[in-house]
Length: 122
View 1: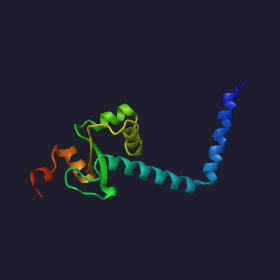
View 2: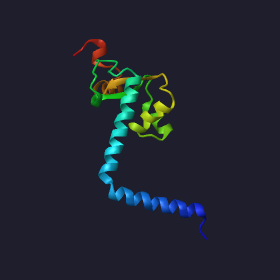
View 3: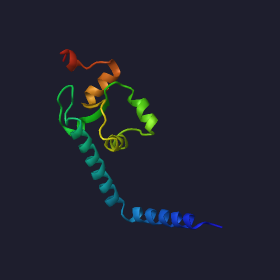
């Protein structure tokens, strides 16, 4: 015999599956706007430009763990990164130890331990 909670959960699962089927594009557009808003809020809190080269185009920017260990931290959170990680930063009142970097600076620091911008090499 099913409980009222199971019936309630099954009803809502069906309702949202049907809703999503009928409103797929609207739902995707809303989620995209939400993800952009979350990223914009986090970038603004951490300086809105790359701490290394000064790039300010939001599409090129991401959040860096200042002391490394980003993969380890995201694994601990159960977050692959992106908006899930950005939401965690918001919920935790933008803790210290993070900075804005562009993807180029972030990747080269991750791979080589330094960025050419930091030593004046172009």
